[in-house]
Image (cartoon, rainbow, N blue to C red):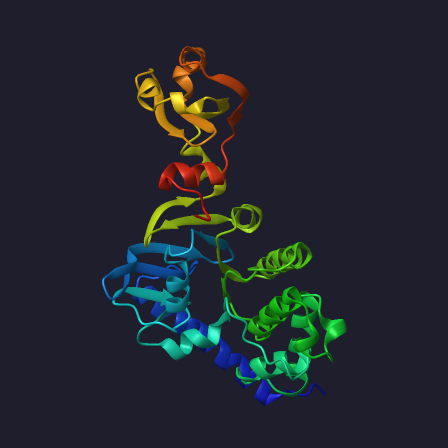
Length: 344
């Protein structure tokens, strides 16, 4: 005779009812189920400085959103607000269908935070670290042990489970930091510059781990000022500067923003003889930058007057030692949009 586990059935019924109620509430709030995060008119100031200045964005289910910008752009402030660490001055935020202001506790249960500063205990083992943080989400017994093992395996540290973090390299500590944040299987993982100051091997391991998490269904917000990282892992990118979003889209869409232009770089002697004015009058030139030993001139591809530029340089008595054209990259996009390099 088939035995029926009433407790198991009741649990499944409760889960179904919860999912149904979440769906109904989300629809009533006007929330699309594929929007894991919705941010509207977010503002945050420190004294008179606007750290985040009225930004709007969404994060879609199952995507890796790269949050890109130089130090001071407002990335960490956004991360800390989403993580419920900071309170915004203004704005509406919905995470996993919950109003962040009114349902902060529900939000915390569904997210994992990888902070920029390490949040691990040096004097207990790697496994104990992960188990401690996972235990905060009510995981117990075999389930807790299995989750801790899976998290450590993902970051490549299961063979070090009995070792204490004080014996780890900086990169290994960063990886353990991630394991502690994901052991409870959060639907949304928020990472604030998780690869700062680590070796290339650990950086590659972390990036590969993030791709695996995405393939398992997690949604990731990844904050960084390393251009190559967002190019490798992000489905969509938001570029920030001085508290504002200045561009967003896929890397292909962002590159298209400046794809109708080409930038020529000239290494010259006697460069002091040059001035910006002599180039700005050339038809099609949109930007001129002259440093101690290099002149960079951007122009419309449809009006590529390279010969006229070269003639203008030679007429001033400058010798061209080297010349190159700069291909469109995210670095180019950022430079064009902000007028400065990413790590300035």
